[in-house]
Length: 240
Image (cartoon, rainbow, N blue to C red; front, top):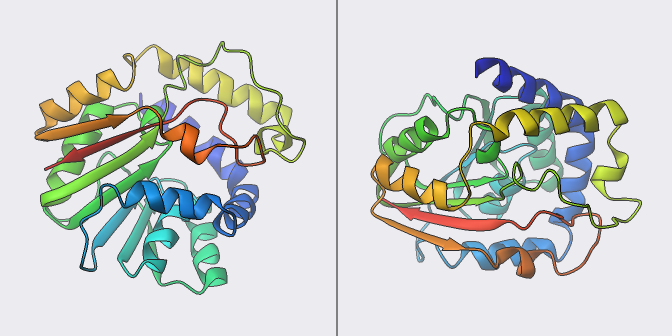
């Protein structure tokens, strides 16, 4: 399982530069307001929050939270992603902090954060039950985990929608596309059907209230553009 984690990290190290460029364009697009509308359904209101963006990539959610006036920290296991996250925050003039860290075993003290956010990460974790227990530990009582993800392993054999030429999938070199497919196939052997499996694991980790929204992808990805995700994402909001 640790070999899979290393393989995922190696894959994303190759994509960091192009990923930052796309996330910067997404930050300046109408998608930013759509993401904020989804967050506001779950975020505690009326005060600054301490927010951890887990698997931050190049820092999109961390920057989003920083711009909203929250204390934002992003972590990622891929050093190249953290380097580009720091650059993205600097380009946007935002005060977000970033650290190289394993999402399944963080270095934070218990009850450190009001909110945990993550996007397209949990499907890549070889020990997702361990991750949910760890996230419960570092979340303050009354805090919320907001997880945007999809059942990518189940969707691997689906026919792909025709995507525009500037879509990220079209720009990935063939060897990386092949590597991503192999990683997905390997991970599929360890995952249950999602998001039902996640709900079970979150309850077992200690979360008291868990909400699932399987329609979020229709609101975020209304158009088939360069940001379009051909696999329907869901939202899981879990409260401690």
